Length: 272
Image 1 (cartoon, rainbow, N blue to C red):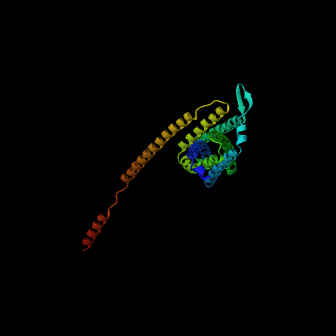
Image 2: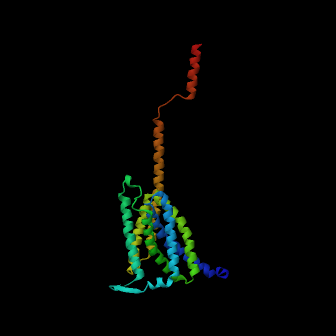
Image 3: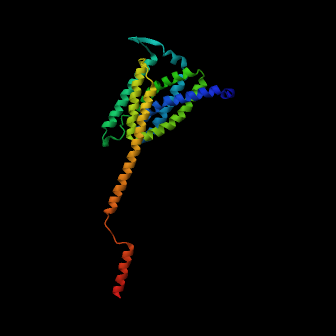
């Protein structure tokens, strides 16, 4: 085992897998963060950590069931000239669910009123966890098939998945705080999930679209939103300073301590 750790090739494969797991895990983390937003505050961290834990268990379980996973790539039937496999059915179903859920959340975000900001009780912890598990299966399938294409060494795959899980837990908290604080970022995350749902469905129908285009578009959108947030902060600070100055100028004048002392002194002299 120690000799294995000293081989540069092992570390190269591990780092490559670790990077891929992080990239593929971002989609999952964004989805989990958006879902947890509808829960009461005291349940959000529990749901996030359980969701990521279930995602890790799903990926490790699929790694150890690798022969079954690879059998899902065999054609089951044809639609026109397209061969549909078990993996394709999972991608199509998962993409449709992600698309519908993201559009529903986006609609709620746009139509919500001030009295509706409290989380819906119908979206309890159990319901959210079931939805997370459903999407974990889809994201994990893609992740494991990618990992198998790079190496057949199970310990390396499991180590990369577990290492990426630690970073996913850290990212989930940060993403959730940003999404909660800035509604614009939540809308951007939901649009990203809409694109991702369409991408998964297209992948299921053997329509291959480079994910780099989607990630570039979302990175550009994120940059614009960050600029917008910074400008909003500056405008808000300037408005607060202006209001403070107006309140100060409109404040009724009062005699100072020196004037009061002088008035008391003159009063004492007059009495003499």
